Length: 570
Picture 1 (cartoon, one colour):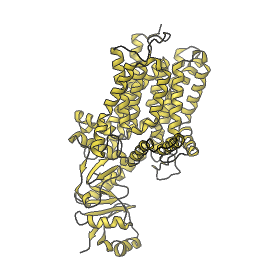
Picture 2 (tube, helix red, strand yellow; picture 1 turned 45 degrees about the vertical axis):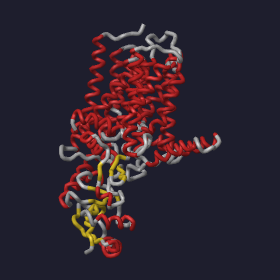
Picture 3 (spheres, helix red, strand yellow; picture 1 turned 90 degrees about the vertical axis):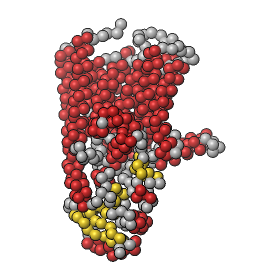
Picture 4 (cartoon, helix red, strand yellow; picture 1 turned 60 degrees about the vertical axis):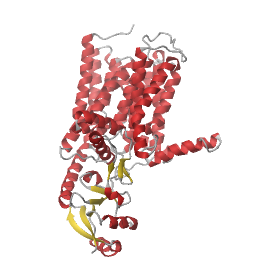
């Protein structure tokens, strides 16, 4: 018989989980509370800026495209990064899930909630992570420790605070979907024999609810980050193989049905924005999907087709050596405590072979599979979010792309903490609790210091950078009219949408020709590093004059940047 905690202890457990969730929401939300105001909501990356802008647009208008008439004169280049323009209509480049989900919630709760939705979802993720681990290990202590580790994990905090990235929302939706999947597949009694046959199945209210919820949340997760299917699909296939006898046609059909229903909003907007149900804002992904479809009609041999599919999937290259280097820097060196605890937990769990259960094997194999795919796939890319490519910092994209790898290790770390603390305390529960608390508190202190001060991309340094950006923003707005267009290289995320922006320099003749056309219909400015007198004179007298443009210094913003005006030569 399964042991059940008394009601009072269950209440204490849930009180602890709720406290963790509240602490997380308050902590992660404080970053946006400090950096933003009612009349100034800006983000530190182009992706966040685009997601926030289109979330607001969708909440207010129900659309996902904005017409910019200047693009009719400027070959569709008047837009920030992470936007695209098609015949004057600006559209999102990135995945639509966060925009559609957050935009729908903003319609209900107001636009002011948008920057705080990711911390709220992050807190929900902590609750469901506890529920998921509790089902996997049939132990509340391991689940509680896992939830605490997630609450204080630096990457989870960091990308909840920087709240308009997709990754936390995707991870939370996946955790919820996995919880309902495990609930669907579990048996009431561990030892009962599975009688379900795949080709049979009667209507069952419990099956209907869990199948529908599993499919729906997996669909929402995929809508949020479609690219994660590269590991999510193989991982789910592995689970299906191991638990084939617990599926039946009824469960599987419902799961697939609700998965498809959850994807309908994405399919609708893909068709409306990009001309195809399967197309998206990423040109490279569209080309990859098209290439894979064409391979099936190309008449290639199996080996040639497989090679071409592999090359298409690894669009940015396949570099195992670089992947291992990135893994070492962003996992082993960045979080040695997690690697050590998870490794010891893995050894302890494997050594307990007499109590080793099938679900442990499925969990471990699934985690190893997804980790291998994610490390090889994203590790083969080169991300330079940090201006210094030699620095391995929390803000580089590897950390957020590898969130499933980190989270998969946490139950193993929690398993070791639980088992070792019980062994160390020799069945003295109070000593075991103290030992576990000390380890978690040490993780908490390390994580807070790492998130706030751990690198130039720590939240404290980002806050100082945001204040400098706000000063620049106020100066530029004071010296430019609302209808102006500003050419920039770095500050689109600060100036848009208060000013129209385009990404460019003054050294490209093709771009300068477009600037000449644009200057006839809009006040045109240039914001970038201040020119030396020699460079300024060259641009003014030689480079720009052939396109009918004159260069005028408007304002030196700070020690690095200056604002210039591009005037038509009369």
